[in-house]
Image (cartoon, rainbow, N blue to C red; front, side, top):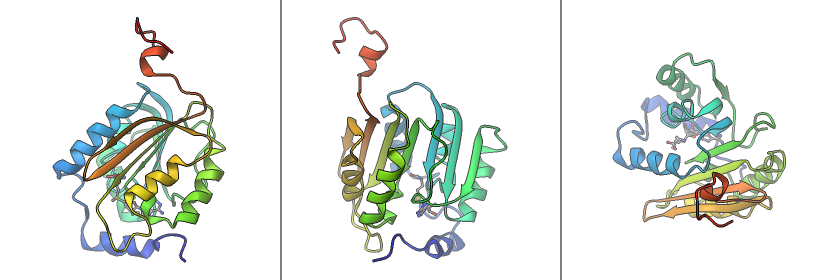
Length: 206
Ligand SMILES: C[S@@+](CC[C@H](N)C(=O)[O-])C[C@H]1O[C@@H](n2cnc3c(N)ncnc32)[C@H](O)[C@@H]1O
């Protein structure tokens, strides 16, 4: 079994179109981004890691909410489009790298895995989560959003990808959203406290 869809698969996809999934136009995507960003439990993050940034439609949202963003993609065309979309922001690092490579530094407090984990095989995704989530600091947020309809080429379904991430030993479920199209889950590493409890909203019971 291959570890992940080959990088050449995505080079071919981008050779045909600059925005192959029409991420910048489709209402499905705009709505998914709005739900995902609204589900993040912290108002701001120190360092977000975004694997599979494609043309930067999530990245442009993250750079306004995070002190630093490190985004990976296996396709150079995607990284070039992200740079063009976001511009020369000093708080953005782009790397041609894969989700199953080493994640950026231990100061990462947000990992946003949107429509990318299902390109890995189950054993590879399990291995990278066990290795890298162990390196995250206490309280780090992990969020995963995946398309739920079947795609013949992908090693995992969206539901399988989110279930595998949710089975990671250190991660505790914080929030979930599911409809016929998309599954979005949020976890935190270690003990969790609700937003209202943590920010002292009167009446919130921890
Ligand atoms: C469907 S787009 C997702 C874009 C964005 N994250 C979103 O949710 O709108 C998938 C992107 O993941 C990239 N990709 C595929 N396999 C990857 C891997 N193993 N590691 C990092 N990026 C990968 C592809 O090149 C593509 O740009």
